[in-house]
Length: 270
Image (cartoon, rainbow, N blue to C red; front, side):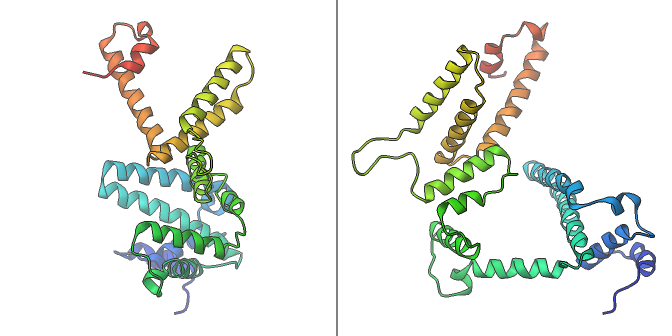
């Protein structure tokens, strides 16, 4: 089918009652048109809108937490807009189009599910994940476990990144566990206590404790992993709980400034 001109799209798009993926690509293309497009959209680059994608993903997560189909429908649309916008930016440079993105994704999913589209046996989740990691390592040319660690994006939230790094190190056989040879226990709790003591010592000496605090956070995030908890969600829940406790105490206190930190952290609510 011959592509419509920008003028034709400006004329036809507002008249539609239902839209599909091609319409969305056309719409963003119109917004980016240098003559008749939107001044804001024309100026955007990958870098200028990259944080918008992250913000929209967080809003989807909030919609999921609220279990709201209406919110999810809207927020997923906003995420889709970000994806299409980045695709259109690359299409303008003749690098790739949406079909290329979808084709590569489908090929990847088929390759990484040989137990569905091939003759590989994987009847448990653990086997599926093991196959997935092995295939991913091969297709990405990762020759060492260090390569798999380096492939974890540095732009991930720090807690998420640390937990993923710990998980991948554990798959390489490096984790806190009892040694087969001498029975020595590499105790994660002891490592956390040691890191905490180093933080205390740095504080007492009035030294920079950022490195020790970072190691403490890294160890705690991997304790969450060992306990099958998501560190990001754990901290998010604690933040929400903190705000709720503060709110309750402020409502029931004549002066919030008179509430001690001990009361705040031990408060259980009514």
